[in-house]
Image 1: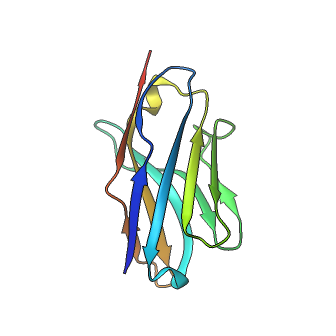
Image 2 (image 1 turned 90 degrees about the vertical axis):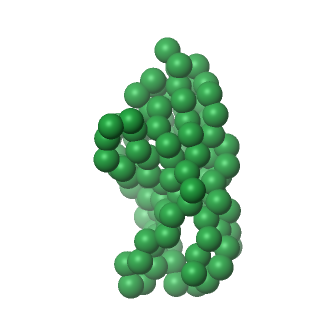
Length: 116
């Protein structure tokens, strides 16, 4: 099993920045990709950023240029730097890991609220 614990959410004004972190533990050797998802009120969970073990990174258009995902070399922590935040970025953010058999693991979520 893989355990994921997020931290770093909070309240920020529009235009501000927040940094989320996710600590990973357990059987991490089989992880092929890690990322961040968010779920806005009344919406489905959506991908925010993903990084593969090979280093490929992808973002949706809604956050590209404002959000940056990073990971440490040991694959123990991933982070999400969020700049130029907008009220529509308000959501619960979840850390995600996927392994070689496409099993998903999720953190408990951290709330990000952007005030206008």
